[in-house]
Image (tube, rainbow, N blue to C red; front, side, top):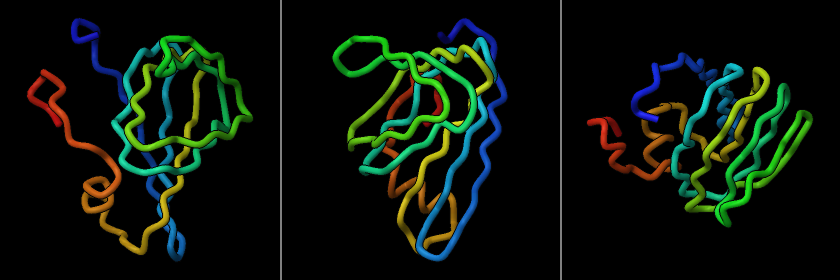
Length: 115
């Protein structure tokens, strides 16, 4: 995947009392890997459709509307078929996105000099 061009995938951050909401827009034709999640949390696909490579090596087709639960340690490969909006929900009183990411996303080496 390193040889393919970078794709802009805007992330919108929203906050309500006790909740951080993270929404990402993924354009059709994109193949990507998700972050490694430290926490169990719900996700919603509110637009689009995609194929998701599950931990057991099976591709699962998901189409909006779809609601699921992410378990700790999860990392996914996503093949975006139609423009997709994927939203996650994280209980926290924190509003600093960098601090929230440190708490919910596992640091790892992307082999690109990025974390």
